[in-house]
Length: 467
Image (cartoon, rainbow, N blue to C red; front, side, top):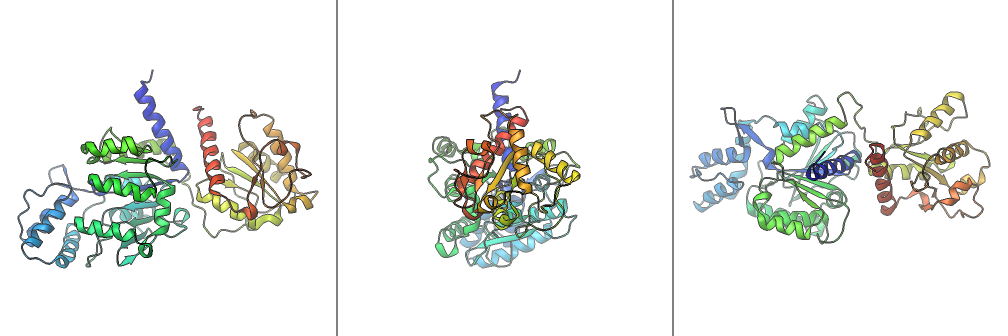
C-alpha cells in the first residue's frame, strides 16, 4: 500500500502534468541547471567557471569566489581596483565563446517536453535556445529568442503560446558586447526596477506569468529577490487566494529558512520541491512526461493564431476534445471562441466543412460526439432562423449520449452568442435543463475559460480513475 507521502507526491505530479497538457505552465530556468565538465568525470557550475576565468583575465584574486554570486564578487573586486564596469561585458562574452560549453542534459530534457512553448530564462547564455533547436528542429535555428533590457524593452508576442516554434525570453538580458545583461547585483536591481515602470513594462510577458502556473527551476535567487520575483510575476498580494501555483526546484531556496517560512505562511500556492535539486526535479518531470506521452505519439501542434474556418478537410478529433456545434452563419464568432479555447490549451473539434449528410461523415460525427469531453452547442439568431440544419442532428446525438452520463457530470454546455431567449428557443429539451453561458459575439470571458479548464481537468481525472 502506498504511504500517504507517496500518494501526495503522485497527486502533485498528476496535477502538474495536467496543467502542462493544458499548456498552462511556463518554466523559468536559472543558472543551477548550467554545468560544464571538470575533465575528471564530474561537473562544475558554469557561472563558477566563468567567474574564475574572468578573474584571471582581469587579474584579480578569486580563489574564494565559489558561491552563486561568484561573478558579482569578481566584478566588485575589479571595480575596487579602479576597473571600469563597461569593460567586463565584452570580455565575459569572449570567454563564453572560448569555453563553448555543451548543452547540459537538463535543458535537453526540458526541450523534449513539447507542451512547453514559452520558456523564460534568467541566464544570459543561449544554451536553452540551442537545446530547443537541436531537440525539436534538427539543429536548425528556429527558436525565437528575445531579451529584455532597460534600454531595449522587448516583450513576448501575444501569440507566442500558440506559435509553431518555441520562444525563449531572456528576462535578465542576453549576452552581448554591451552591458545589456545581468552580471552584478546592481544590474539585477536596475532590470527589475525598469520592469516596474509603465513605459518599460513587458506587459504581455507579465500577464502570461500571472495567468500561468510557473516552474521556478534553479534560479538561485537570494531570499529578497525570490520573494520579489514571485510577487512581480503574480501581480498581487501573495497571500490572496489564486488558482495558479508556483513550483520551486532550487538548491538555494532550501538553505534559506526565512524564505521557506515566508512562502509556507504567506504564499499558499507556492510549493517547494524537497526531494532533490533542480536537475533531479527536471529528470523526474521528464520521466513522468515521457511515460504519459510515449515516443512515437503525435506531439501537440499549437493552433496558428490566424487560422480561419475554411473549406479544408475536417481533421480527426483528439480524444477528449471539446465538440463545438454551430450554424455556418456563426463561423466568425465560433472562430473567436475556438481561438480562446486553443489559447488556454484546450483541444477543440468542429466541422470546418459543413458537408451534407453522408454515411462516412455521419459516422465521423457520431464517433466524435461519443469521444468528446464536453459538447458546446452554439445557439444564436442564426440557429433560430434555421429549422433544418446539420447542427440539429449533432444536437440530438449529444442528447442521446447525455442520457448515458450521470446528471451530476456536466456534458452539454449551451453557449448563446446573442440575446436569444431560452424561452421559445428551438433547442432540445435537454438544453433547457442546464445553465447557458452568454458570450456575445463569441468573446470568451476569463470566468468561462477558467470553468472549461477545470471541467477538462476533471474529465481527464475521471478517465484515469482519479475521481
